[in-house]
Length: 269
Image 1 (cartoon, rainbow, N blue to C red):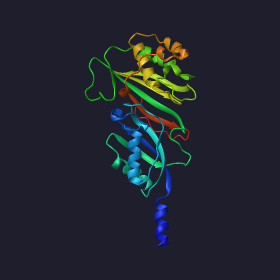
Image 2 (image 1 turned 120 degrees about the horizontal axis):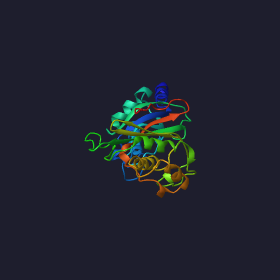
Image 3 (image 1 turned 30 degrees about the vertical axis):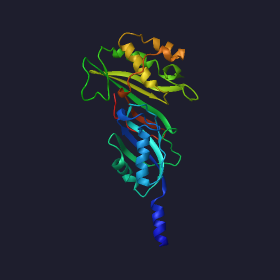
Image 4 (image 1 turned 60 degrees about the vertical axis):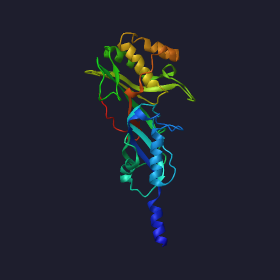
């Protein structure tokens, strides 16, 4: 009898997990848990509770807003379960809704935190620049009818690379300790009718990528000059930047870590 109890206990050891998640953000009020509304974190935690019979808290690498999608969100959590590590992704998917999926899951170091261990996050903002919108991709791309000058947009985007105060690009500052962020990459590329904005940074302020995208669309349509980007940043005034681009064009594609275990980007240049 004692041996059986010991064997059961060993099966249910508490493990630290790291999982890559993708989701269609259309029907969510964002990633982070909120009362009375549907969130990605809430769905993942509910699924883990069904699997483990206990309350499990999940930490996400990025707190995406309502309507924003993800191909490479990373979450971390600790759980006691007899489910084999190699079967954890399949087990979670069996109880998750269809618009959230675990791409892979595995055991990680006890000290790993999806948010605080991250070196950078990468987003792609997708614009469909043609006369008519897409019937199939309307939930995932921002339709821009008027012609966009992608070269001018690229010029403007490059002016945001570096470490600087991005207060002017934030919709709200909340309780952030500093508005300084390091942008490793901010680039625009055109591929036929598609105009893609790639942004990788150490971290982002609320609405930062969508505000950059909205301003770059103004540059692309000739309403602003690329040279205005420095003045907007220096102002630290949100009113100086352009409108917030629609959420459905934005996707978190990759989170990178110092252990080189970052999620692979599924959207490349």
